[in-house]
Image (tube, rainbow, N blue to C red; front, side):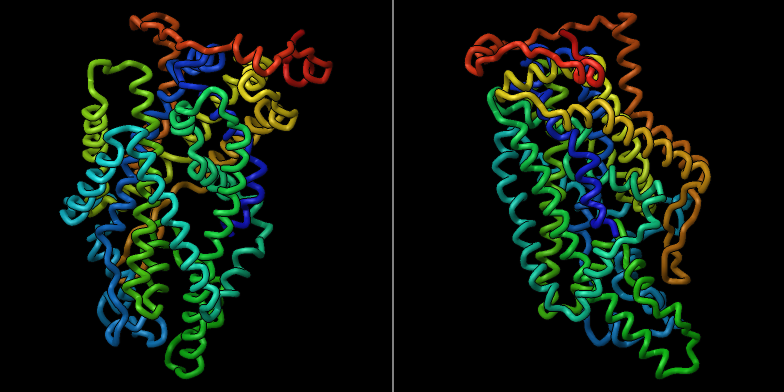
Length: 541
């Protein structure tokens, strides 16, 4: 159900990608009007809230692909029949939950009963976490020069693995039922705010919007770079990649759910002692409960892979793919933070290698909270509150600053100087109206749902052998509010500091921008605004 929303996500959030690229120009601090005005509007430079947001998100990003290194799923065998030989729930905890689920929660995570439980470090995860951050540092130590070369591998390897898994998935028994579940929509989901918030969060993460990493990376492009064409290529590529990935995932989940469904029917027919109802053998229920989030990758997908021939080979490919995806995510967020620190001249005398090492060390220390027995619950807390709502707010402020304060007319002039053509009315409508309205509606609807239904998280019940939903304790809800505020309060806080001159803020000197040269090269002529542009977009003569 998630990926069939890509079409709607594509139309709702396409506006933000070229906007981030446009405001970067040749370097973030090298532009003449758009970058400088953006800095003055989203005080200090916009990467500040994004920089702190990158600090929190890259910590739990590191934890997520640390689990790729620490988790080794049990190989299938006579003692671990996953689907075809049902295990009575009256036996051991491993039998009640299934070997893969038990291994994930008890062996890999060594998880506590709840987030209120006593917590202790899981040294296997700490070691893997340290190794992961060392890899990130070695790839980022030389900045964009070193990470850019590594990306050639980390960006292409997942595509290779996905192609292999795709052709393997469409040969599995029951794959078509998984694809049917993916592409046949449930229209009632349109009225659930959580679906729209998840869709918005997925788009922000997929494109890197509002993190500051797009601005940081695109700032290295030459001034004459056609960012509009590249933004469209990235948008379309991401859309089709998402659809392709969803087909791979749901073909394998369809295989897993079909085996479980057939086993359930066989149990009901062959045994009258077991209390199995028709509702227990519903295919949609089985596949919808296959897993989500970390459970999808480390439990559901792993169980399906265990049914493949030569299972260890497929497992190695899958977890290497997750590792490279995690590295790619880390490169973008870390580069966004490092570029922001350098552009604001916070530590002008500190070499970039040392600064990168300090940032990685601080991030490692923060992420140690995920390497404890309650770390999975803390990870869920960060995942739920440190990502979606702050990203919405930051992106909303960026759109307001560029569309209403800096002005779409000046932005259009800047874009015309750079690529030789002005943005169409579609983009102007998205930046000025559709984007802010969509974000406000999603934000308000999400808050209403949170306050009306409350917030819960999944806890592992070792006695029953499965997870249950439990409400967050009061101190976690307070921490959730602080996580949101820690990212967005930089905007009004820095504005107050700058307006009242509470700190001696040194104004940045913009680098050279060849405006006259570009105007002559592009044969730039002053744009004469029509009535529609004046009324809708605030253009002047």
